[in-house]
Length: 387
Image (cartoon, rainbow, N blue to C red; front, top):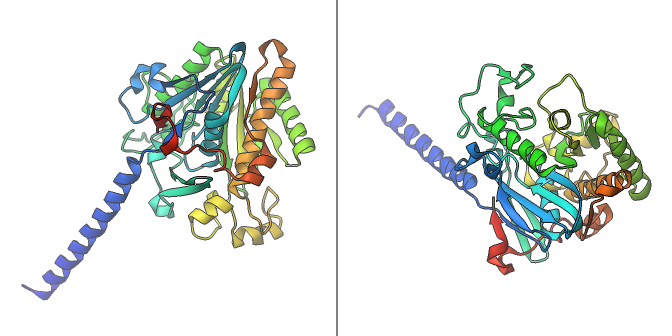
């Protein structure tokens, strides 16, 4: 056998071996089952396909947790992991699911809104496949997802995504981005069906408030903020001023642009009676000029390049040697959501929402995120759900 043929054969075997190892890792990541413990306030768990049948049997279907108070009141809908590479969202949602008790009104939560994106990744950017949160009973493992749904679940992408119903032309990738496909339609692409299902929840349940949780780069001006349309802006402003005065963290308000379609904080308000809010917390991991995309960077937000840029006034948030740890991000989301509820209840006392057992910013920073998670191995198996 010629020497060149032997070399080519060896190289081919090496490539096949590497592809096999990578394929097994990606398969395990896609099929990893993350347990969520339904806390004492959870009264029922449904599927998103209960609200739009086209999702049934697809990977886009996802759990919907209901926490209903004994006394009637307003209703709040929390959406997490619209973008699954912004993990403070799901970590915040799980704190509410596993701890909150509603005395008045109703709380509805989807912890993994874009379930397909939660099973996707970005190997070209060196994303870790998993991260772990330390708890009082050990560590809790999470999948690290991607911004967009997997092409395995929705394909092919169009050359240009034509938004429904406004006909605005968007990037082809936006067809897999569930913060570009609102308000959705029952017979559209899979991610449009996901957002349509959420709209059906808000319409059928007569939801008063919707909160979509996100994270954004420190170099992006729309970060560390509440994004709200005109109909929600007063409550957003009062929330921002109150948390800054009482809890000593900045959280400014951005007005939702009327000319950019497909966004939750725009379309929800335009196509329902619900008051929408989108929360952004700083996420250094997403910034481009950083070191390797490691789990440490994801969790503690410390990066020497961003620190250098901060000293040159190039960032839109305060940044020092302490970085932007996950505790601050999740604690901020908890407090902002609780304050939105409080401000809404003050403005509409006949629709007041009252809940307890959810920590605020200072508590999460002090105790850590994992302190508020229940051990699924020691919980009633009937109360453990998997996403």
